[in-house]
Length: 77
Image (cartoon, rainbow, N blue to C red; front, side, top):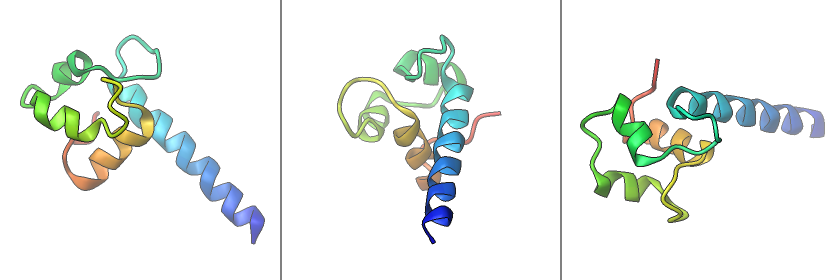
């Protein structure tokens, strides 16, 4: 049972990193408003702030994946 949980966690981390890489133009592991705006020109600062749940001004892989799952940001690619 622990092996299944660990495998699921690792798969989720890999998927999250892949999602972020689609938007992360400079490869720093964070997605800025400008980076996401390049692929999602309809993105507003208000929506970006809503997605940025930790309020650091950048989206990490978890925030981006959650936004895509909720339909706030389309899947890249």
